[in-house]
Amino acid sequence: MIRGIVRSLIFLQLIITIIAAVPSFAYSGEIIVKPGKFDHFNVSMPDRIIAGEETSIKLQAVDAFNNIITNFGETEREFQVSVSGSAVIRPSSFKASSFANGALTISIMDKVAEAVNLSVRESGIPLPILSKDLSISPNKLNSFVIKGPRAAQAGEKFDIKIIAKDSFGNTVSEQILGKNLNLIFKGNAEPKIDMASIPDFKNGMCVVSLMSQKAGTAIVEAKDLITGSFGASEKIEILNGHVNSFRVFVPKEAIAGEPFEVVIAAIDRFNNVVSNYSTTGNGIAITTSGKFKPYPSTMAAYEFVNGQTKFDLRYDAAEDIAIVVTEIGKAQKGTSDLVKVISPIPERFEITTPDSAVAGQRFKIKITVYNQLGHAIKNYNIVGPDVQLSTTGTGALIPNKIHASEFVNGTAVVEVQYNKSESFAITAGPVKTVVPAVKKPAVAAPAKTTKAAPAKETKKPKKAKVKEEARKEKKAEAKALEITNVSLVEPKKKSTISIHIPNLDAAIKYSASAETIGGKKWIVIKIKPAVSKIEKAVKFESSFVGNVVVEEDKKEKGAVLVKIEQLKPTKFHVVKEKNSLTVTLKHDK
Image 1: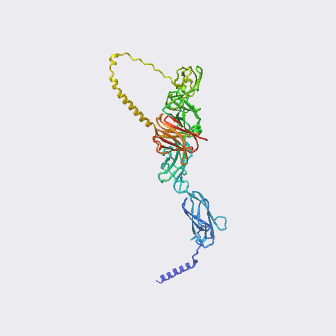
Image 2: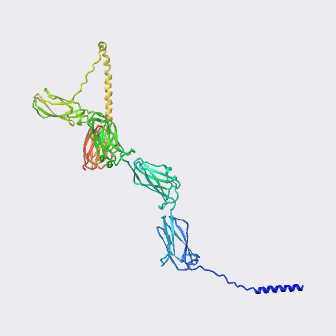
């Protein structure tokens, strides 16, 4: 037991000796390391800045080792913030005291998608502490801007650009599929496109090719079917092409030697009226399918107004003809329907003679022949029969027949002689063509001549037939005197107003006068007998003719007054044509 105690004491002493041989350690208190002095700002911001949206940017004041200076607000430093481009920064200046725990939040907003530079300078120091380039991205799709040409030619392709825009006018770069785009065309032109061929947008833009065969104006509208975004172009004028043919409009019937109305329109290959023919055309040559030349036979391009011309044409022979119009120096042409040109009826002969003559000696007489319209038959030498002269005296007039070829412009001047010393008058008329009687084959006369009674029985039906025909003629006459329309043709030097009266005949009477009514100058034409089918005043786009009013004459039953307002003083005259009264105003300038 004593041994055990001794051993334990020896072990304890050994341990104490080892401990005494090991050196001792000393421990200090906790050390706090503070950030160094201010060196720069760290910037924290979103990955993308969107145009028109306010974006927060966080600034942290740090030392050279990027340690945040939490007590930066204790300094008395002041800083200026600036940004380039259209961006707006808030605040534009700040003090160190604005920092909380070493951080400060500023905001930037820019409505323009652009690259800008953000810089922070300490007051009084020109070099920036912070300089950072920022990129402003477009906002989401809001609308389309559509750009096209001001004008394009019918039948020719033209391009329009469709540009995607945000609500601030920035071009949107996001993906837009062409299949989601719907195009709508407004106006009287008719652009064509295959909707399936619209391409996708690249860099915010899509180019589409269009083509319209019809002239007029067009507005292109685009709509995105997904977002509902919309845009429209300015008006695009589709111009007519070059003249390809002519359309010629003529009446079904005319009188040889009398002018009749012809309307000619210049047409391109897509049936558009060539409205600029007066400046681009060569003029036209006018021919016929008949034997003679029409008058006029040419017409200058400047006579066309908005691609059309309306004029009076004369043809001197009685035959069915077509009017043929050809571009001068080129092959473009047009042909009218057939016009039935009928012979004029020599209804009146006017004879001018001297007051006295000597029996057996020659003296001159002048004969003018007038047709059913009261106009001199200027082509009588072509269409008229010979003229038979008769006298009221007992003597002989030599010659007593004048050949039609002796008439010039409807008048013949001839020398005649009379063999009696007496007073007499000369009358004239067309030589009547005697048709030889056709002999009927011989029949048994006795058997047929005894039946006279049936002939008497037919008298009553004939009278009834005459009355019926008279009634129809009276009804037709009443219908023929209806004023149905008023039209205006106005070349550069005159205005021609046509008062349309279908089936106009010699029974109608008219008079014209210039009057001042209500402080305005009017041409007043009184027509009788007539009725008007025109209920409202007619207004023309003219510098010379204002309103045209057609109304019943309150002072005289069965008469109609046609009042034409004169905007400028002009000379006028009225002529009765077939199916119309024509009022021509000659412009002073």
